[in-house]
Image 1 (cartoon, helix red, strand yellow):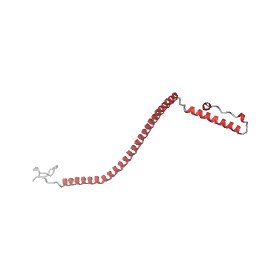
Image 2 (cartoon, rainbow, N blue to C red; image 1 turned 180 degrees about the vertical axis):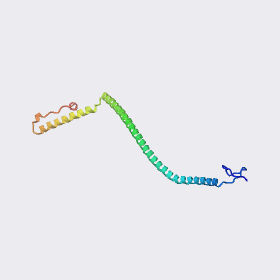
Image 3 (cartoon, one colour; image 1 turned 90 degrees about the horizontal axis):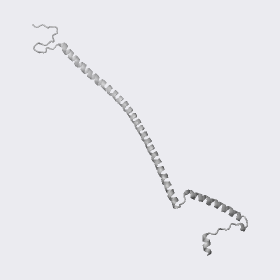
Length: 163
């Protein structure tokens, strides 16, 4: 009869499997440990998933804030750029307007058309003369002798009608 030697795995030299109960128990324990690890992973997986969702929400909020800051910054730059362009364009239009006004004024002067300043001066003189005439009329109407009244000047129309 064959006796068991220490270190014998419980298999026969012919390859038969006479299973040792401790090997079966070890395999069973390994299997159960794997199932336990799987169950633990499932249980913890939900918690990890929720934690990842919370972190994702935080990252989303941070990225939205950063994006809004960048948009605000870009809008500010564009506004400043547009203002600069507007100021330059306005300056150019002002120069062009001044050149145009100067040329028109020169052309009108060559044609003998009085300027607005000339017309203003004439209006001031007419107003002054009107006041003087009214003052003289008031004196005459107050009983001054008729001999001191100013005689009207003869005009070219008066001279042509006398002929």
